[in-house]
Length: 499
Image (tube, rainbow, N blue to C red; front, side, top):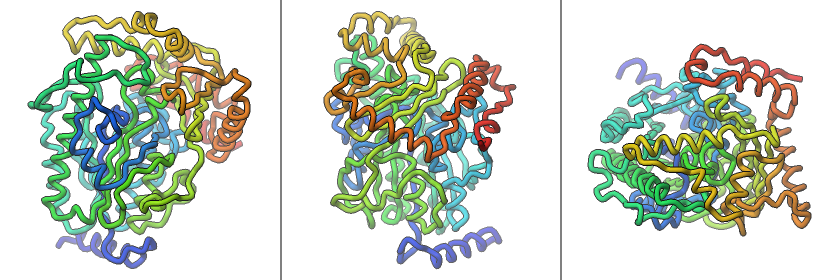
């Protein structure tokens, strides 16, 4: 064994000795599986359009979290939160890494860094998409691109087997697949074997609209999920072949909702709700849980499972109290947020909160036009034309011909007031804003109060009107990706200035 291997084994021994989580044997391996741009449109979540037998089986062997959320419905922002346990306004990755947005501090504690410090081998397959990448100490890196063209998909499982089998030390491996990001390709390398057709699927209810063209697009979105399911099945077979499955925590999640109307880049449920499955054969009782959980809960969960010292100040909660059946003392509210995605084309800061039934979305620039409303419509129409060889999809006409309540909801989405209040029990698609209805004044006031307390407790910099003004001016000044390449973002300095 070389010197590095000897040091790693010594660290592992120390980690086991110092383990405070009560593990009697070696720490568990961790396999973290992340998909792109999909909500809980899976068979195990009751979606009749989905063909996902491998994920359905994984759900039956572990915990299916019915109400799981991300902190922000954007790729870089969500992934940074997953690997730091912080909200975007706390870690600083408030927009896409490809547009130069970055974390405030390189020294922010990260999941791979904490696990590596106690002897774990750390690996990533697929994109990281966070700045700076050097803040995430992965020993093993493969397929660093987003791979949206789905090249060499069998390599994900091949590289995973190579990494899992390389050493006896516990491992942390993050596998990041390109599906179901656009383009929504109906078939790649023969997957799925029998692609779904438009008549086989239903458009997700949260969009509120019907259209033959949109249904065609949605069918291929479900084909992406079917292909993803097959690839994850291959990955889980690799884990079984290594003989390490029994002592491996397997987690699957989506990084945020679908890139459809009222999905990605919003604070609506279609953007924030994700699938979250967790299997740990020796520790987790197979079940479904309905508590409000989030991806920020995974870092404290995994640090505790690995016997690491907890990172002070993390806003999430370890999920271990939910591993066994029965009630648990758990959070009563969950908060999320939005800043931007690219820059000026998407910038529209919001905060949201739900108590599980009622949902409040607070717009920080009320009554202004949301630039991403038109951007999303144009993007979907452009993608559709490219994917289907010039075929047209007129989403504005689709919305204009929908039910009056749906038309009103889209008009409100384009230019929202300060507060939107929804009853998720009677209106899960968030089409009827109750904020002006005096019958719901008590619920509105309560959510406003709890949201303000959360923003205060988590030191939300946009509570300061001057910081909101400066961020708005800076982000709105960057309109093109070519501009962002040379832009030196100043927000990491002024948003973290103390009063």
